[in-house]
Length: 463
Image 1 (cartoon, rainbow, N blue to C red):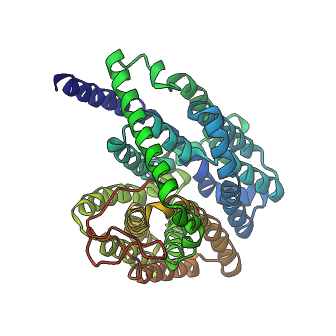
Image 2 (tube, rainbow, N blue to C red; image 1 turned 120 degrees about the horizontal axis):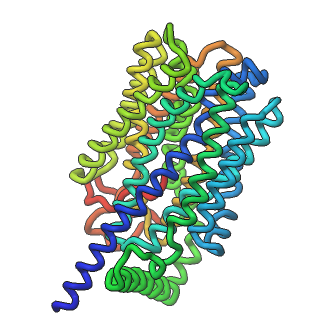
């Protein structure tokens, strides 16, 4: 009994060290990722003035990133499993940094399109590689916490991207380079440097971690191995006794619940990426703003979102059903977006902060529902489909806004469309099913029986 207690203590100590040493490195990587993904939002008007990239071309190029990301995510995951998360994370960061650096020398629309597509290809697989690394280092009981902190870091990273972009754009003319060239060049080189540093800071295996004691290594290795063995055993039993269920797995993916989830997540992604790429342009309508002030003002909605996500997480832990909370979050996003469309520029920023509190909180709330409402046999492929199709909102939002602005000279119709999409998604939530605490078997379509209140399960595992 005493030896068991010692092993538990060593495991807890090893996990705490991982959170203190490794998770901050992951969060720095996430900040770099956000900087290189969203910097064109702050450079938009400068690219239009200097290179001739109009609103529609800008929106199309911004969206091309997500097309490439979707195409190359699976191949990237396959290569990550072959080379390991440490090497592959380094490759991802260095390659996206090089592409972002080359954006400083863009000369026309076609070059802009090519580089945005290459950036999406370079970044593909970043999040799965981080999650895979967590799975090799963090016991299952703490893995959700690590993932939740990493997801919450995306809002912090978005808040930091504005001030950093504003400072870099204010260097216009320094050493003969334009502000937007400083923006792309510096942030690209930063990712290359961080990526190379990550290779030396991250350990490929638990055995290589000099910051763990021998007992801590042994406890952590044993815990991970035990979990892997249980998972393999469970899958083996399912293969022996559940052949019919395996045959019907892809058939289950066609059930209406999956389609509803895809539609709702698509709406959430619309709001997130419309604001990521067009918020700086909206803020610039405030009289007297400069590149520096736009950068700092653009951080306000994301800072508000961080606090909203914190309180939403606390309420989520206490709630029996996540659907009412998700509906509230989506309606807050809809109301905030609609109000921003009809308000003055200063008030529009205030209402966009309200909207950000809604749609950023909706993302982690959303992912608890498929995890609790779908049968485990269908869950993994379902999440992949939901994530892939939902992320197409990252293409539709910037491209659609670009066309709307070029045709009307304003993004207001686009804001109305976002508000309508969030409202529609809130209505669709009503039709989602959640698992009951007494159900032992799924329905024939792969979803668990519905209930208005439930005991919820784990937190989000994607962004």
